[in-house]
Length: 420
Image (tube, rainbow, N blue to C red; front, top):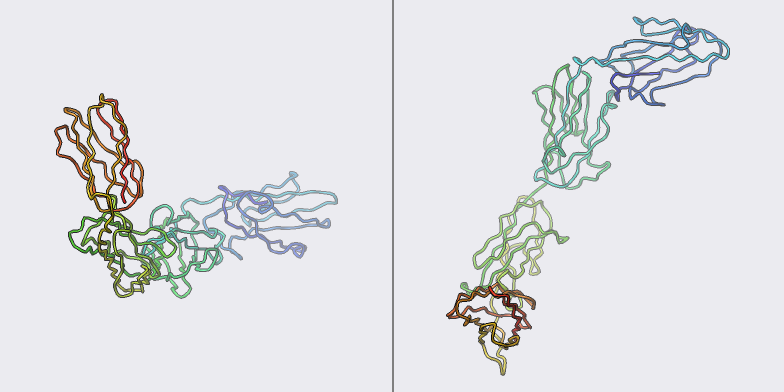
């Protein structure tokens, strides 16, 4: 049985020796102190048997000392601590258990840290594993490409010895489109790097601290979106957007007018979509022509960004002429009166592209109007204490808009604007 102080993933080597050594092949026991990995049992014919711990073969065991060998029942074996062995005379029906206790020597440890750097930063996970004689030190593990601690780094405190680590683009997480650009280890000379095998080997000395950084790159380019309005002084406002080909929003520019620019945005080489939506001032795309231009920019907004390229797409909007409507004016007024006077909800009708002016004629009282529902929003309109010359809002999209008027007195008035 193996007992390690403290418990460790270190494997310890044993073999049988003497006349009956053929009973038991060389074997290893784990320092995890948990059965069955730290225990091995044989059913043997009566006779003399000797077992020895070996700190060298086949796995070098550095930084550990054998503290003791104890056998039960008492007197069932002869222990030779200096030779790291015992000899037991096994009688018929006897059951002998011998425990080898090893203690880690603190001074013989150091640290190895693996760091992942992704250019550009990415949610991609990258897989690593240790290999070679001391690979049991470190289970396969993953590091994030987000470039933020602690998800992109891992540190082990290890016994002095030789350790090798490798990045794996295949298992268990497939990594496509990335290239290992560099492996750098500090202090200088503390490790041997093999870029072809995406690995390094470090000879860890007692008290040393080695850090190795794997830098992966993905080909990138830039994408810029520009806004042009015709005429240039048109009051329309648009939110410019860049999304992935699957529709994930990557960047935007809120409420841009003529000349607004989104970017340049650095993106991995690949396929993207540029688009726009109406801004928060109630701009509706239905009131504008809309077309996209620029080398590599599709009319539907699809864009392919190649490695090292700089793509600029221009979204141009031209306001459509207002279609004449029959029987409805291009302007209307809504007047707010003393709430003590009885009157019901107000309703007005205008043509698309027309304006509604709200007047506060209630002396000494502050009101405000808030959008309630409709095809698009319109901004909250404060109404100054009367007398007021009026506050106007343009309505460029057909439909029925409902609003609510709030006052400093406990008074609420709902109204409706019908845009034809």
